[in-house]
Image (cartoon, one colour):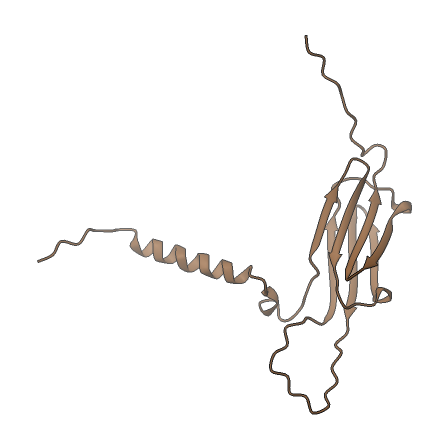
Amino acid sequence: MALIPWRPFRELDTLRREMDRLWDRFFSERPLEWLGGQWTPSLDVSETKDKVVVKAEIPGIDPKDIDVSLSNGVLTIKGEKKQEREEKDENYHLVERSYGSFSRAVRLPAEVQEDKVKASYKDGVLKITLPKTERAKEKEIKIEVQ
């Protein structure tokens, strides 16, 4: 007769691994399948002493189809990526590109000058530069060492 060590939490380890696998799958590179085919552009929000910069990956969209608005410290980017299918004796085997309308809103980390916002679009990346207000700019305070 062989002795087998008793592991009272073996089932919990299995449950934890299954939950980790489920979360990894949910936050994988293709989460669109979980969201019913809707898509949202990826954003980078950075801040310097003088400005906030938001970059959004929106490839394949005409800049005229992108709407950018700012209200109460929330930047909203909306648009639509139109599907470009020409079905002349084509049988699709795989379609991974995303199409349809999108909307993305992000709260800005600082107060900005709404009348001086600039946006540019190049190589599928929308770049929005938002200058900070004087009040939002950090002031450096020197510490005297004695």
